[in-house]
Image (cartoon, rainbow, N blue to C red; front, side, top):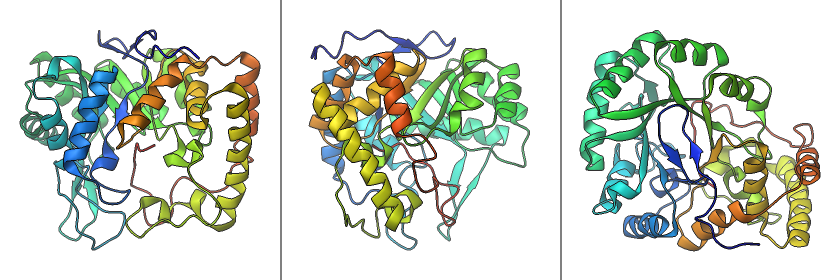
Length: 348
């Protein structure tokens, strides 16, 4: 396996004029959902990632505002952006910054989504301040506000592009109809959705529509929230402040079934001379040139391992074999439980 992880071909983000190395870094887990994290260590990991060649850094104003466990203390709205802003001091021109707006917390610890044009502008200004920058490279509409036509929200985002505060716009977890309506107002550079070996819901309609419109798919949770790295064993215990404790794929018989699939992935990886997570990322990268996975990590050694996936070469037969191994009919458990159907994440 070639270890030159910075030489991989670049991937354009739609028609925005921005291109990135094909493995980014998702930052959500540095603020919430997977247990407590050390802010200083997180900043150091981001800075190390820049030195390793990572370019796309994915955050949101919302990361830090909620908890996987109701009533548990959380860092606060904007925390994750502030971490990234700290890390980028003196390094801003070496990073492509992606952040999101619309998700807002309530005093009761729940969430709602705000797509009003006036909020788009206010949220952008606040994010720019927290990030310590004069521009956001990729600005996502995090989740749809059902009370506001998507055309109105995207129109406000387009105004930010005209003003130079945003370079490209993105959507997250939307239908093909919404994607087309938004793209008709202003070119959408990227769509962010969960996509991995064990979560394939975008393949039927969303991914083909992205390709028809020239929109890059940014894949969050490309390592199945850590499952596809082979990090877990039978009887794994996820604490109350770990989001995975609420997810069907990680529960009981579902977990044991899915673990058996991961054991097969581990054997495949061993034969290929790679780590299981690297094979999972290489499978995504081998699907098409317009997919950018954003695995999350708090540790530089994990970041380095993820980047090395760009040097793993899978044959078409390998890609097909892995796809069959994790055929959706073989993976047990839905994406979210009944209590967290509005949550999202981009952790490993």
